[in-house]
Image (spheres, rainbow, N blue to C red):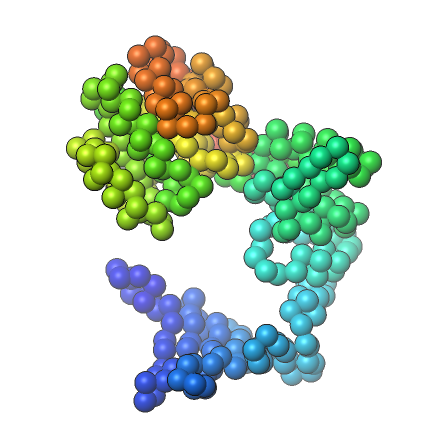
Length: 374
């Protein structure tokens, strides 16, 4: 099933004598099947069959180790790139069309897309940091952006989440390529409305949310809260989300003996939860936007986090609706938390967060897209 509570089927697995023979995958109908043969007591995949809505075969993917071939009724293709080219050609683009390519589209070859969209216009969307290293003469683009950035003639416009990243990309193209490129700022997410608490917020309460992964540095938040509690004696922290570091964080909470005021709360729909808290805290090393930061200001939360590109610099104005910490450490974060609860005018900070959130309402983001697409 899709999950433990669902009545929806995700896949059906057929096994004979302990060997997997076939898997059928479903959304609203059967979308494809995988066929296996036993080799050295392992199930070896040799065929995927993709279906039309009526159950007939659309095409087949023949698999032999690293080799793949695609079989249609009227043609045979020997690479994923050729498959993408064929599928793009079936869309019959005109100069009235716009194709949006997500920069993080997995292992699909971006060149196969970008070379086959003409005469449609092409927008290339950037969600993460776009370069790895630069010096006075050279720049190393992130690998999933490399083709588009090396062939900007195939891209009509780029889209970033923040104005800071937009300006940086334009400056880098001028410096390293001698080119002017069109870059638009359109956030990846929006707020459906501003949210206010029904009652009072829990005093001296912090919330953080997201994947419990290494780059989120939730361990630093826990350590910072333990330090800050020496100055703010009733400080609490609730952590929402899940991930590979969950057991490690639970062990840290046990080791620091802080389970009375630091909780792992698991996955929840947070739209109506943020406003129960007084502030949001982040220790992420890489937020090119930060949807949880957006949701936090949309619920009027001040934010404390590290002063790193780009999300914190978008949503937090230091001393107005939070603190951007230049000392990248648990100690620095703890100082910011203490300062927030002992020095700041929280009501003023909340009003400024709400003000920040106004420009991220759905109608504002829709307007940006309409302007670009027209």
